[in-house]
Length: 132
View 1 (spheres, rainbow, N blue to C red):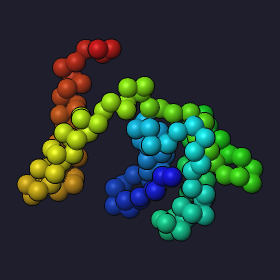
View 2: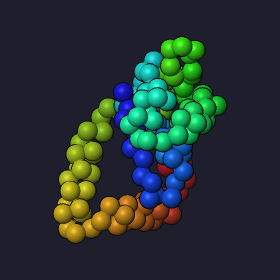
View 3: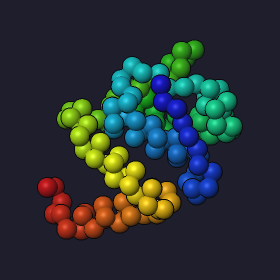
């Protein structure tokens, strides 16, 4: 089951953080069709957020066709966003983890690492023709 983390200093609305974290878990294959999301009550207890905020996030995921609410049972994943070859990303993930460890031990803050990663990703996007 997914465990949500809310960063109140990020400037990103809490419901949107839930949506993004769920999408990320679906993309990485951490959530699969049939998996149950935590109930709104469970998310509220873990994050101290308003239940309506959780329900708003779940409604957005449902509108996108990613989850479905089953009355009295909870909210369940309908489809995955994972690529079929995602399971073979282990080596790449290990290399990225090692890079992250070096970056954070080099006195970079989380925000610095994120900015650096995004800048390199954007540079790569500018160099790479679409569709390749």
